[in-house]
Image (tube, rainbow, N blue to C red; front, side, top):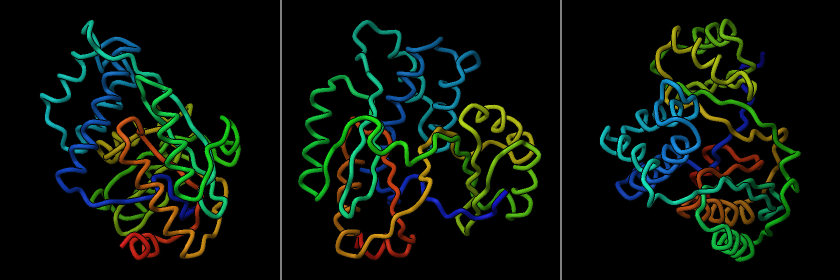
Length: 248
């Protein structure tokens, strides 16, 4: 098990201003509603809903908001969201995957196509870049749960595949199929995770120069701001310092 893969999954970190927090809550609420609608509206009997609620709590989403999102699934006036994945290339040939929950796929596709074309990229067909990523589970803990050795030992015992630790926290990778089982085992050893989710992890990272990198980060930021977009993944090779420098 490698200790540090340095593969970034959510590629563009931002501060949590009120506006950004509101956007995060909106996306979390949409996932809760969809999870409740696809299964039973009880987290104890619905694994996807249980994960969605846990992730919302980790972001300090108010209990009332969570309950409202669950109840919305039972309402006759609730939107019918579709899970859609879009794939394309950004500046410098960087592969980009965009996961969405949308009630209007034509609007979403049109918006995404525009974002890509205006920022040096192109939207492709489904499957055009996803073969360059692995579908895996990601479990994240803040640094406060313990040092890298403690987390590595817990991860091995839980059956995880890989751990990446830095000053901010610990990212634990699992198979997609084993994510819930590993998360449950880790919770007994380390407590509740800050987030548990399925992600697209790049198999290899692609270097990008400053000029292309600046445009790429702008594209990712615009994608993340879209209400229909839940997550954005890309396979570029930039350090956190480079991201902060080029985003300034």
